[in-house]
Image: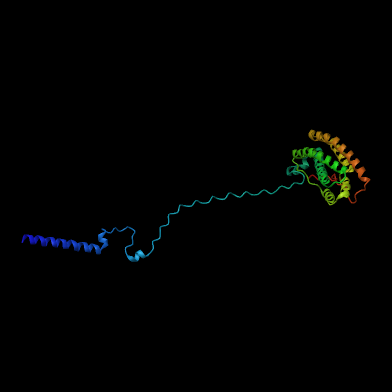
Length: 261
């Protein structure tokens, strides 16, 4: 009896064990252990069907753009009419000798600019050896004289003046010429008559000058100008035998002095 009871008890225990294993096989959740629920997991199938958008990271505060710099009011361009603005305001208070010196310097600068521009054209378009040689000598002289002349103008607060209307027209007529006609017009424009007038104006300015720097500069220029006048006479003598140019007006030295206000 005891042996049978033990056998039946062992069979019952084995049966219970088989039943437990079958139940666990049907429920995989229990077979794998307790279900761990994530804190953010959806609570139902409907909630799990809704896509969960990722959270947008917090934006760092944008820096305010720098304030635009205060607009600088543009200063109107100064207008130069041969004299600095301060010189124009104080012209009436200048002594007569200084006003005379300024008028001479302005006229001398205009004369030199026309000579240089005409000689550059002659170097490129001239045909006769005399015209080419004379234009080279004029440009060589003007390179040194004009630099010193510009220094004298700046020392008085004056700007380098432009050519007047008569000079510009004469230069334009020269620029439209070619060949032998160009050579004749060039000689007429910067020839002996214009050189003679220039020498007279320098001599007159030397007699009236009181500024030592201006006086010394004129004294250095006069011998060179007299040599240039003589070279222009020789050049004109050769060109006169070839015929004179028509319709060319000498305009090398300004005839009108600027009005000082």
